[in-house]
Length: 274
Image (cartoon, one colour):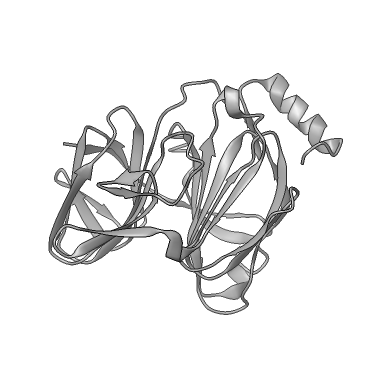
């Protein structure tokens, strides 16, 4: 049965044009979890904490995933894609060889809450063509699990339910799980993958260890996991196939060598991104 290797809390930071975030992966104690490069939680009911958003900025060499729990975020990019991510929706973007995009809040009051994940690409895919998927909440399948709980299957496969994401190079499993009080759930996991759970409401118990709101549990994945809660809880479960390649990162550019980073900077400065 799968267990927890490490428990950590997110660190408060700001990014973009001053958006207040909780950095979960990408902090000093958990710089990366191959293939995951970064995980941020953003959430506030104070407009000044998020309204400036994430103005136009470049990416190369990885994928970005934005999952909105509440609020609206508009996406625009240099390839010509536009879209609005609303409550429960997902944007899954392949930056590949280079893209410039922006994500700007579409509201001036109320709660804005969600996650952004950076998912690394192998060397063979780092210079792939940029691509974008805008997934509405209604397109995400849900499944009952346990006696009183349910899960939203964003990517991968949970029991007989397929995730909404189609461009899933790292065979990522991404579930948003909602457990009601006094319930136990279990599901199959992928032996050999890197995985974690981040609790954003309530608390859960995995193999005797308590994982509470605001904590990430890095998992030792076997072929199955069992999760127990005595109170209501909400959390995201993610796992993905490690790449096991060298990483060189300079801000929004993630490549394999310093030379490739230098080339990315030159290409961006020359206006060569799509």
